[in-house]
Image: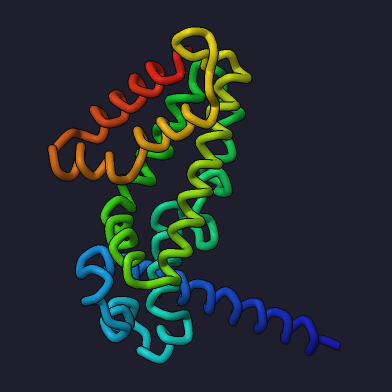
Amino acid sequence: MSAAPSRVYRSELRAEQAERTRRRILEAAAAEFSERGYQATTMAAIARAARVSTETVKSAGSKAELLIGGFEITFAGQEGADSLAETETAAPVFAMPDEEVLGAVVAVIAAANASSSRLWTVLLGASLSDPVVDEALRRMLEHRRRDFRLLVSELVRRGLAAGADGELDVERTADQLSFLMSPEGYQQLVDQFGWSPEDYRAWVHDAVLRVVGG
């Protein structure tokens, strides 16, 4: 009668080991793609970085799928969540008091941009030649627009966004916030122009307030 629990335990252990191995592969892929770019990164290089065989890497997905999965865990902390609104990190933010919520949103997005802006550039470049990456990029951008629409609606609900003239176009405002808090903006201001992360967050916070007119 004790065999069944033992088999269940071994099965769970194998599943956990497989999950850890997959995450290690995706983290290695993200690092390699960020360092070398899409075309120059090989499955063998990813395997060396992840300390697994090349066949194990190939079984985890195609090159395009590894780039996509690597970006997801780098940006959002988990695979399958290319939208911050779908993650455990973002969930508590909207439970915060009105005076804290915008600062918390900016901090979450800034942290995601800091970890993924270089890989985002690789993703953009790969999308020009790889249809799998291009489709994933389109999905990510639509999810990003949806996230910012949700953010604007939440700010309106809390009375923190009214527009400069008392009226607010949610769609247009969401597009403006998406631009302000984009990975491209972070990379330019922090990585290229040398802004500190603190200066970047303060600038984004003030810029968002000017856009929403709250």
